[in-house]
Image 1 (cartoon, rainbow, N blue to C red):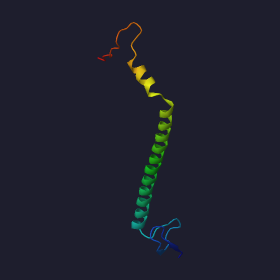
Image 2 (tube, rainbow, N blue to C red):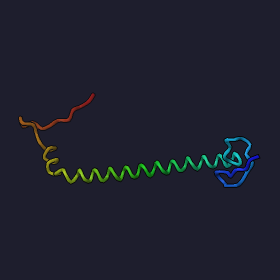
Image 3 (cartoon, rainbow, N blue to C red):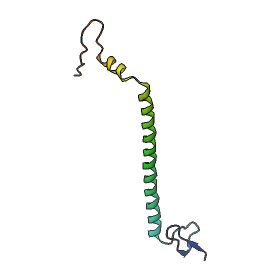
Image 4 (cartoon, rainbow, N blue to C red):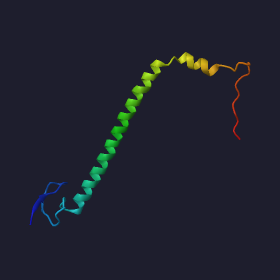
Length: 90
């Protein structure tokens, strides 16, 4: 029989199947659980990095916009002098 090291605990064991990677089902389950948790951490880090990039992009856009132009646009009234009315959705 062939000897191989377990991918989880590193202990040597006798291989029963040619594709066997772990010495016990517990080591196999622990390895898969660890991979699942590592993937979650990586996804969270990717999300954080994306958020930081978005924050930098928004900050760059803020520098390009004059806030007083926004205020003036929001306070404008129609040419005929009537105040803007809210639409009611029924």
